[in-house]
Structure formats: structure tokens, C-alpha cells
Length: 309
Image 1 (cartoon, rainbow, N blue to C red):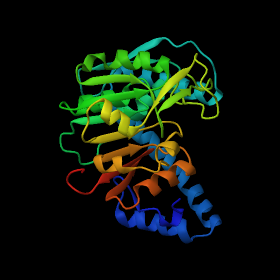
Image 2: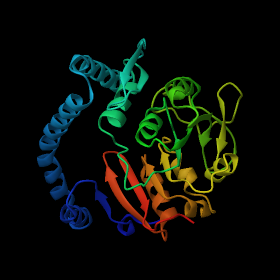
Image 3: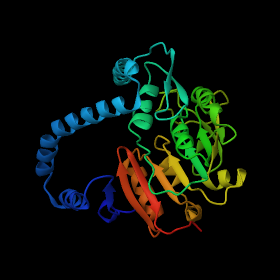
Image 4: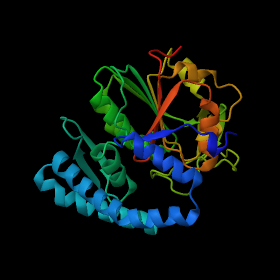
């Protein structure tokens, strides 16, 4: 695996490069107590900035009469998620900002947090992509990222992959309005094909995942697929944008011996869940001409050449 010291420079979207270089220098050479002091000093500043940014996005994206309602929805969802509370989940329809489209989410659940992150704060704010035609959304959940891509890129076709059956049902409902430009497939992205079992914990939430230690049993089985298999199944020569949020399974995906499919991917947007996943990802991409940037929780690897192979 690639050591952390040899990982590529990751720029923070919208931040001057000089600050990126300073941050990298401090992480590599400063004592831990210095880093702790810096983080402690910056924490309240970041908190205030985050609240200001959130208020600004609410004002820009939601009608006035929906803003107070959404603040309550978000506070309840965050509280319930932190406490692992089991609550009833009535459906709420909310607009996709700056479009005529709407999505349905489950109140009091992580759906509300995802709506805030993906559609209000645009954590998948695209890099420089010129009219992408093929987007593969792995870990589509209830379809909010796919809806974001479909509404932003009118010529794009999206393949949405989600393993959890409860999430898939709502994902299909949310993306029906974009047909025929979208296909929703119940499957789990993995390093090899076969059958996997869905974990009972966090079922039907943004943290739904496969249980890598459990044998398939039938009741909660899901088909595992690889990126090459998806490309073959849907006759995809090149993926313009590969979005991955698969709750730790990226370790399996990027630990395969054959990663030649990377040559046919122009851009990857991924949420890395662990240091193992991060190491596997950077090891797999080593030697490929990708430029790396970070926007909120999402790491973007953008191919620097004009076309994928």
C-alpha cells in the first residue's frame, strides 16, 4: 500500500494553493500538540463559517416559507441519527434547487442530511466536465446525487447502483421523472462478482452496507458487481463520472489486481470511509494522470488528459 507521506497533493476546492501547501507541510512535520492547538483554535471559526454558509444556501435554494420547516427537519434528523433513534418516517417532498424537479425524502432520517449535503451544499459540485454523457452512481441511496447530476447535465445518462432494497424503492420513485436517462439497479459495487449479504445495522439509511463477514443467506442477499462488469452490462466504453459512496467497500474495489478499467474513467468522486480505503484508492491510482481536490466530504480525482483511453 502507498504510505501517507507519498500520497498526492489534494487541493481543497476554493482554497488558495499556498494554504494547501502550508496545511500539507504542517501535517507532515509539525508536532501533534501544535496540530491539536491549531485545530482547537480553528474549530469555532469553522463552526461559525459552516452555519453562515448553511443559512446562505437555505436562502438561495429554498422558498421563504420552506426554510424554517427545513431547519426543523434537519435538526430532528441530526438528533435522531446521533442517538440511533427509531422514529416514524413520513414522506416530505422538497425541490431540487433551481429546477422544476422535486424529490421525496423520509423525515427524521438521514435522507434529510443527504438533501442538505448533496442538493443544498452541492458536495458533488462538478469539476471541469464538458457535457458528460455517462455517469455511474455507486451507492445511490435514495437517488439524490443521481437527481443532482441528471438535473445539472441534461445530456447525461445515469446508472444508479444501490444495494439496500428499501433505499432502492425510494430511489426509483425519485428518479422516475428523469426517464429514459436513468437506470436504477439493485446491486453492490465490490471487487468481484457474486452474492453478498446486506448488514442488518443501518438498513434503509445512508449507512446501509454489505456485511463482508456474513455468508449469503437468501433473505437479504444482494448481487455484487464490479466496475468492468457494469461497463460490459450497459455497453459503456468510457465513464465520464464515477461517483462512489459505498460505506467502506471501496477497499475491496480498489484492492483488485487488475485495475485496467481506470484507463476508461475520466473522473472519480468518492467518499473514503477509512484509512484502509484511502490507502487502497491512492495505491490503485498511482501512475495514472489524475488531479486531486477535496470539496466537503468528497474527494475528486480528475483525469488531466483530455480523454480516457
